[in-house]
Amino acid sequence: MTSSAPTRPDAGTSRLGLALLVLLVTGVGGWMFTQTPTPTGGRVADTTTPASLDGFRQDAWFLPDEPRLGFVEIPDGPFLMGGTPTTDPGAFDNERWSAAQPRGTVHLPTYYLGRYEVTVAQFAAFVADTGYPAAAEALAGPPDHPVSQVSWPDALAYAEWLSRQLAASLATPDDLRQRLDAGWRVTLPSEAQWEKAARGPEDQIYPWGAVADRTRANLQGQSTVPVGSYRCDECPYGLADMGGNVWEWTRSPVQPYPFTAEDDDDTVGDDALWVMRGGSFTDPERNARAGTRGGGDPGARRPFMGFRVALVAP
Image (cartoon, rainbow, N blue to C red; front, side, top):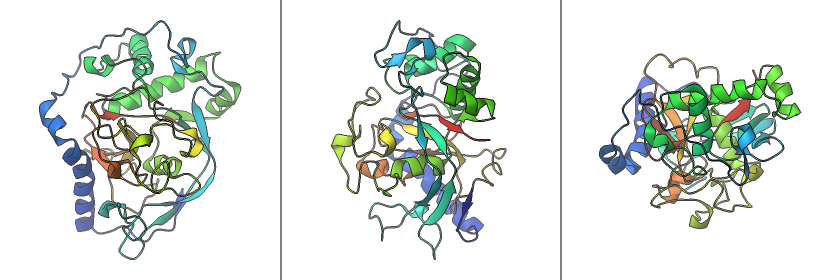
């Protein structure tokens, strides 16, 4: 992956950018952070899975009943990442690439992104198969709602399990199997992959267009809703809930722009915070913008934090 970005900002700018990232999540959902207890580590959740679920395949780990099991192709090509108030009045300071360059061009090869956020039923299938010590609260919601109360390691563990299942199963469509045989893997999207999919080829400010629209996303509500509940014909690639419902973990550590994939591993061993995207049911419209960057501690499990998966090349 390459970009046209200038040199990375200095350390003072880095600390400011990191603080802004974390505040986006902790500020908006702060009352939930203080009033919702973090589940005790090591408790094994209830692994009950539904007998059936409309629109999802019980014989394929409750993935969507679609030819590619819900994996949507995002084509090769460049896109403009980031923003400033001159191009988007809702842009936050941490979205600007540098003082001289408001946005940067990032070229991404073809990848696939889940049409929906990972559901309770899908995560339950993983826990039932592996005995993974998920939080009991993660599986307490309705099976077709996005799973929440999942930490960053929880999300990665699910993705790695799903990658193995798809590689080994006869239920896997041929085109997905060919990619897995060639070294592709299921993982979390990078924040660039997430943003490109949310903006689409028209460079949209919101996943559905240029202006805020409460009819296109689950925002400022009381709880999650079933994935895909909000019709959004304008949303790129047919992806659902790219704004609202739950914040979505990415595999990118919190760092100031400019974005490059090459340095994403640099801070993994340094108690890195991880970027989250999309806003949640607790958030105002501004946080559902394609460019909004949130961040969280990898061990945090909260009722407004979930994820979706990507299939990426080696």
